[in-house]
Length: 141
Image (tube, rainbow, N blue to C red; front, top):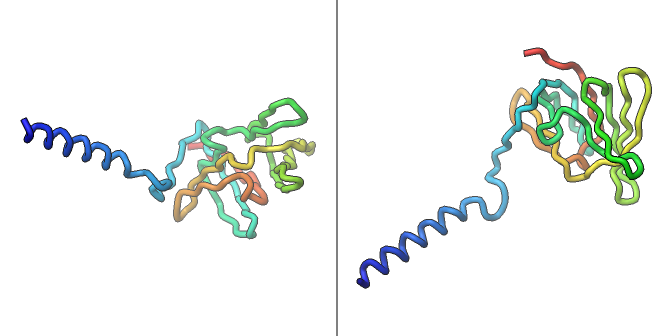
């Protein structure tokens, strides 16, 4: 009976240790959420490092979400020419220049991840670390 108890304890310990594989953060692998449309952008971070990305998305979505006043809004990527960011008074503001020449100012979630595929790597960056996004084209696959 003692041997069965040790076996059960060892099996339970193995299961617990296998489940601890991701404790302490991400595994270091950037996994993309494939968006329904493929947009190509030039992204510039707060350190003025730029990268061209395809399959660009905001957490897998092909619209730009935020708030204007108390209203929640989302702008389709097809309508956007460029987005410039400004961190002020602990709020992240986005000035969205639309392709029709108009513009929209909104606040955005600082922790929202932007995802994309560069020539050399998959990329994930939090919105607060982005300085500018220039929409280059929608890629037709």
